[in-house]
Image (cartoon, rainbow, N blue to C red; front, side, top):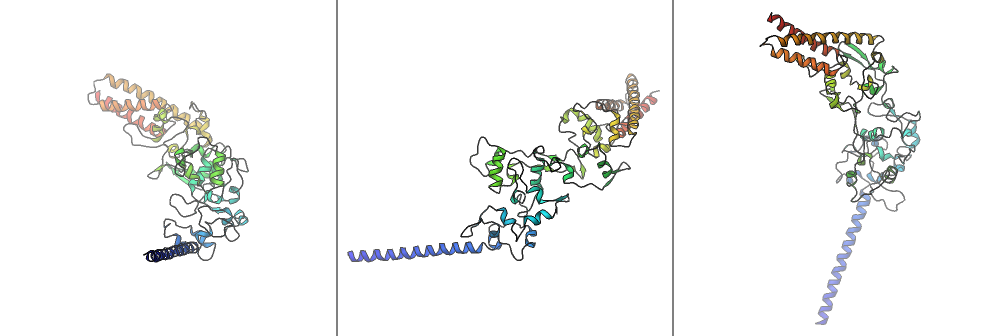
Length: 418
């Protein structure tokens, strides 16, 4: 009996040994297969099917680029896939040597030429950029391709005072990216030449293009929990940049809230719905409506050319209190002598406002049972223009049309009553 048990234990031992050897063989085969097969992008693509590679990289090397050619740390006895990517992989002599990157300029999204040498230097506050700082796979777009969202974080996140160009210009300066605009625009039969306005010393880009940046790039704590279970209560920006940018390939947009750099449009028309972010729009709603050419009675909407050009309030109102504007300010954008034309138009509107007030007073005293709607419209236009306070300067054509409409209607009902 003991002999039978002994033989039975031997058979179990042999079976267990054979099973263990088979398992080890399978594991070794799987490891060997994985290590060798990652040399082929098609293998990785079986799981990472959402990765669309930037085709420009294919033009650098002949043949296929394996994922492990980039996603692998240095000095390893065995090639193991890694999320991290060292700059040395990108700037090797076989791919993108630093000297070649520094010598040549690149055109990015129809802006001025982009130079890598400007962005690879050391910035204050541990803001030194790595290749993956700009070339990051975000928002499901092409793998390793640069996105404008990343550019916006640095250029518009309130760091303009800390980060200056070699010429001591803020990095948010428009002309760093945008070349002179050779464009003529027809507004109310007049030709607007963009370059002519760029050459004027008293006219800045922000005088017209003011609502082109939405968002401030602030770091929201909730974003940290996407990667971390717990986060520090206190931290400094240099420390965070050192950990996330220098030591790891964290994308800027993963931490910073999005910044949108574009003119807000609706049906192809630029919306000038934020006259100046310094002021509360609700306090100047009437002024905005007059410039937008809306809100009056009896006349179709008719925006002013300044509104179409998204003119900033501070372009004319040079102080923060939005006080009265000296007519000479008009000459900054318009031809010399335009201030006299504006003064004449303001004087004309003032006279027509006095006439409209007189006609309203007369119409209200008379028994005009069928003229109630006309009187209501005229009174609405009168107080609308009065509350605006610019005497037509905000939209001279629209204001004059409102006045002429109301004055004509009141004259008609007054003549009918006699």
